[in-house]
Image 1 (cartoon, rainbow, N blue to C red):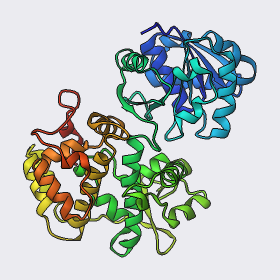
Image 2: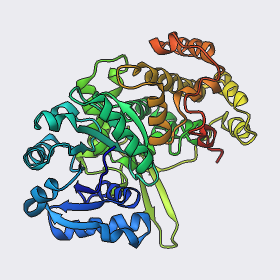
Image 3: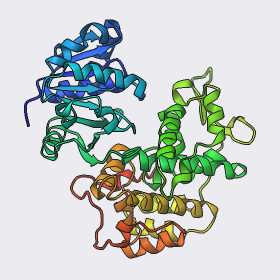
Image 4: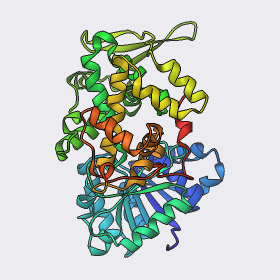
Length: 435
């Protein structure tokens, strides 16, 4: 791998841009041109970057600049141009044309995108530029979520793809998975499928608890750092919409309808209730004079917020006890046999998660890719680990069939035990939360 000494970061003032620049400066020891709309914005990004790694040592690596005054010069001397501007062709493509006119042969150019076409973005470059153009989808915040989806397009050189993957993994300490240029790639395709279907399902069970019920059923004891609809609030309802709308418009798989944004979420977006960044979304928090916080949840039928009640999931106590005892066979048995509506819903979502993940193999990525995307990008128990927890390949095939979900070809042909693909790289048991 050629040495990467100088990097230009476009979108340096954004949280993702600044935090990614910090990774490049701290681990890659590169000089980084931090470009934004104004020098003040670029300097703000430098402060965020320095604070994110809690080390003033890297501050000397950064050079603030603007798109208007400094882009061409910065690009011309860079070994890597790392673009992290807004998720919009109308913003990215004019910048790509300027980058294409200024880059020297062999310069890597990459974009952070949650699902835009990498091939389309690469089309603004000459043959050399297209050879070195990639998607490098870091997950946010990159100092905590170490996943990088390295997205290729048809003009890439496979030999160089291996080189850049090695640089991202060994120098920048990313967990790299290779993805083909498909809508949503791997992580967002799988993660937002589950989150959006949970949002859809919440409407049908509003009388039983709605949004809060789905989050209680799909909580930490089911192998995720944060419940899915709380995650939507964290991501932002507007960002969630952009991702699922893109996947819905550009894919036609057997989960297609589960990517359709629920009408109540559009209503919240129209009202500016975008989640945590707006102070309210699917949930709302109010600080009281005594310093405590009251939590509210959106009632879909009433179109208003109501106090968040504690929801009891009947079998959760037994599941948590099994996790505390590190008895994951027992946990699997509880999930497969527990009675009641809550257990039925949980089984549907686990079966869908496993089946949908495997349905992306090999069109989007491989088994390591789907496992890495979910384990390192979302902090969710990976799908192949669920196969082991639920009793192995044959048991899981029957489980998915019983839930009336199509068994993907990858699983239909699979064999072997244990099945977990990231042994030695990820301890998935830590992702089951006993709290």
